[in-house]
Image (cartoon, rainbow, N blue to C red; front, side, top):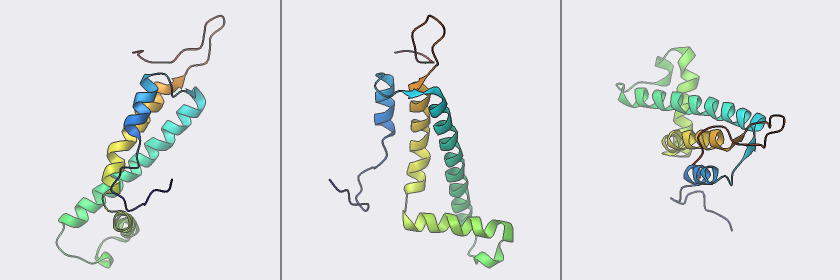
Length: 125
C-alpha cells in the first residue's frame, strides 16, 4: 500500500514503538540501540536548532538573508527550506523523536552475565 506524502496522516510511530518496547516485543542489542539513540539525539539537536532559527527569523523585523551574519546565513536558509518543503514536520519531529529515543532505551537488551538470563535494562512493567 502506497501512502501519499501530502496526506495528513502522521507517519511517525513514536507511540507504537513505545508500546511495543513496554510489551517486550521491540528489543535491540545494546550496542545497536546505543548507536541509534546517539544518532537520534544528534538529529533531535539539529531539529531543535532549526526550529530556534525559524522562530527567530519569523519574529525578527523583515530582513534579507544577506543582512544576517555569514556564519548563520546557511543555517537559516537550510531551516527555511526544510520548513517550506514539509511545513510543520520539524515541529512534529521535535515531538516524536524523544519517543523513539525512549522506546530504544526501553528496548535495549543488556548483555547476559555469566549464568544469568538476558534481560532488559531499566524498569520492567
